[in-house]
Length: 437
Ligand code: XLS
Ligand code: NI
Ligand code: NI
Image 1 (cartoon, rainbow, N blue to C red):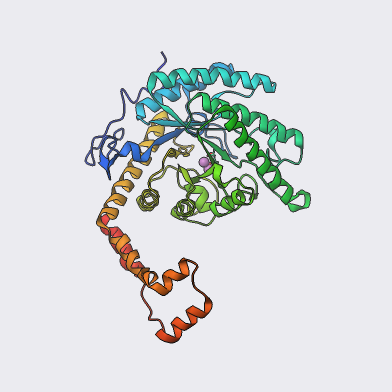
Image 2 (tube, rainbow, N blue to C red):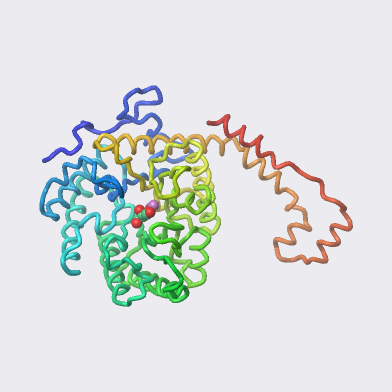
């Protein structure tokens, strides 16, 4: 058996905060109990197949840089089998419980649709065997409906029905593959579901098409008995200028308008949140407030760059705030934290893949521990309780129970006069957070 990651002999283990070993966890102690669950159960980490094993490090100015021994085979299918072997070696050595893939990551596109399907079936069988051997599970599968030139104008929103049908047929296969591998979720990321100019676009028709596409997916899942959760991943721009699934609010509105809300939750990605001009935690809280937080793509952007840089998460404030929202929502359920992240093209050695993931896992484990300590202390909850306490008054409670009126509010004001100003104490609360970090 070929060893692709000789730099890690067995598995990466927890050595504690004092460890100087770059290939050990300092904070992620998977069996450690936090608020009644192990860290592993809370965080449900997944590795993204596409970035970690397929991203070659090319950019518009230069070629591939990554050293990937699994890509040395000439035949695309041999290559795909070797990549799959390398992937499971990596998952095991990192001791992550889950992974995620696109159909075209796992198996190459063939010359015909049928050949693509048969390529995928072969690789699904291989991945299934490796899942059994290693115990690693599939968090979610998805279809790549954006790389092939046929999808230049989108898939579900394509003006050409032929392309729409091709996308639908491909998704049918990808859902079946996800089901066969026991995937706990299936993700739809818009890819090229958006537009560049209204000069050639019927905006309403494209959204109607997309909704019809999703309804067919829901029906197909029911037909084959796929019980995984369907997830939509919002992203505001890139590759197209206007993506229909701009942010959580836009996706929730779309799902409600087309009677799809019961069938979908959201997969929130940190870097997509910031591209939309929101904070990561805002997107998590917005999805959770609608009861639709499904899973998370963990990464980070760069405040100086305006695109999806997909860097590994290393910002402790961000992971703390994210974990506060996830814990407040009651946990991530059947979702998980998927590292939709890649190393920089200058970090071209396989050991860099370990450094990226170890850092991300440690940063989230610390965020979890800090968030748990804040929750146990009760300081934020107590502050908010007091801040909203006037809503417990009978006149206010009647408003929320829809049993009041403008006239009743007027009466209240006439009886109570001018409200007194109350400080929001933001600076005090920020200082409190720092005492936990
Ligand atoms: C791209 C998306 C993509 C999805 C899966 O920006 O984040 O990686 O997670 O298609
Ligand atoms: Ni993503
Ligand atoms: Ni992304």
